Image (tube, rainbow, N blue to C red):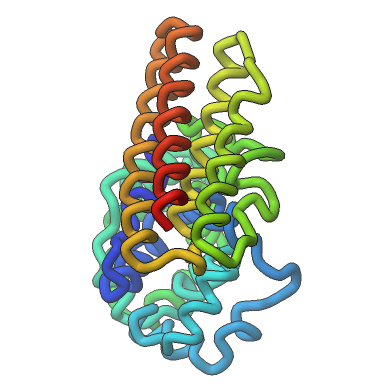
Length: 294
């Protein structure tokens, strides 16, 4: 399964609407995990502390209604999207019910209802959630009154989003590369910044795992680093340099995704690791060359 951030629009004007769709879908947990690589957030900070009175505006009209400062603050606290999702479920206005849900959510919802139905007394009628079409704030409040229904929706929309990822590789706990804590360079000049990025990428060679699972984990850790680069601001670089770096990073990420898929499909481990070696050589060469031109 591909990373959610790979589908994130480059156009800032479309980003808020895209996030609204993620909030009512089934992959919010994936997105929070991926964003946390770059912005782990401040422990204890609540949604109301970060957004203040603008929380009510979001519940009425979505994230597109947020001020620029509030939106940036929220993006730096990705764990708060889970809190916002629950508030949208309980108190969201009609706007939220009009956003289309992904087909996978309907399938998971039906499965959840089947499991719940087996635990309910036979005299209790069960209405599949996919037949319920919320249209107002009152609908959400009525649902909240019903403990069984509320539990079903919450599990389907929130918990499945966070933990129901049977086909997704485990998120690696990274201690190296671009995605480790403070993994991106601190240089104030473009030349030093790009060379430092190259130095960090070369950490790939520090370990040479042999087994399929260990190689896959090492590649996954490197892939998380690409996400960190894609989400970072890179202040020492010019706009053109940032755009080019991110464009190339998407290509590197795609190659790593391909290697992971091949490992999962049983391809030769040594060959897959060698192909990552070539990708690393290519990206390091680009970063060194770009640093020399800065």
